[in-house]
Image 1 (cartoon, rainbow, N blue to C red):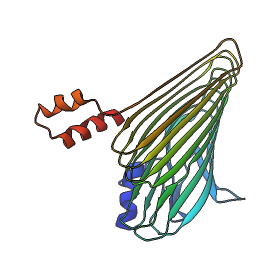
Image 2: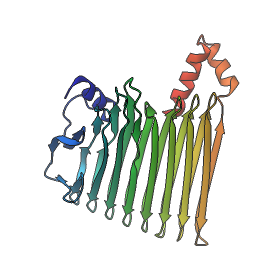
Image 3: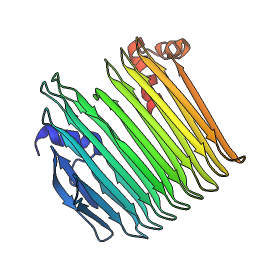
Image 4: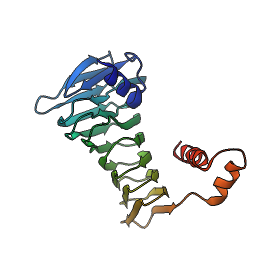
Length: 305
């Protein structure tokens, strides 16, 4: 890999060298590095582009890295990755996509990830999107995540998109059985004329299932953001969704909540707040010697942490 690709790996997966554990590194449309372990097997899909990750029941404290990097202008791909997490496993999955576009044609990655999480399994899923390059071509990412959660399973999903992605449409769907718990933290910043849309559809099907979805975002310049979340309670369950956004310059933000209770003991909550940086926050930091621009950056950094 060249210097650009190595930098993309650092940005999306914090990889300065080959990781410990299982991994599959995809670069410019093909797998360039792969390793399975005794408990985690990575194989090619037979019917389409992508991989299957099989994690044995009872696997503990292991990780798998599956970053995607693209440095070829004009390349477009759709990749299908399926994750099968065995009963009582406890694993971390680090994904993410980095695009460097130095040309005039658009570069696009659509990643469709499906998770099948068995009883009592715990999954931490980390996904970071990053764009770089001074070409006129757009950097486009459209991830789709489908999560099927068995009884008493747990998934923590941490998604980050802070820099350089011109257009993204993120679709998330989840189906939870009894006692399953889903926790999502989304952090997002757009600038220039970038567009970012996030959709969540969570079906709380099992008794005592729960979901907590939090989005924090900053929209700058002439960018546009849409956050749309639907929680559907079909049994005694609990669900909470929250959207906090800072709007700056000429940006536009829409937050669209939808709560559907199909059972008398479904407890669902939505919170949303959109506003500019408070003047007193800026003044307080500027009295400590920061310029207005420095104060803004410090506030944004803390907000998205």
